[in-house]
Amino acid sequence: MPGIDECLLEAMLVPGARGASIVDWISGLALGTVGEAAGPDHETTAAETAEVARMATEYTAVVAQEPSMLGGDGGRDLDGGGSEPPKDDGLVVEDLIVTTRTCYHLVRFVDTTVDSSVFLHLWLDRDLGNLALARIRLQHLAEGLVLG
Image: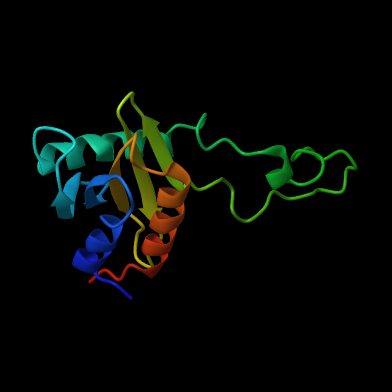
């Protein structure tokens, strides 16, 4: 299972990768970076990307529940039987994709046993990158990442 440095080096093997980082989205601090910075420097990029990640996880329009998550009746108690909502009372954001004319920014949240406040950020060249492949690779890297 890879640590931070190994995970970032693996992320840079994704075709079209220009830069990668592992960021604490609560503080906005980069825990590790490799390659080019998408902004003026890696610290600024980490802080700005963390802000986007926080917004995506905090606003209910993004993490709104789907009717299928609430049971067959959309969460309404149609039969008077007192149906309860599921134990997981919301959807969890898995990843974010920001697309510009020249690049993709992929943010993949890392599920950790402590507080899950870390994400992987991959900056891809749009002409050279494969968005689907990058998402799959980031998912595997996030699942195997060992922090500590």
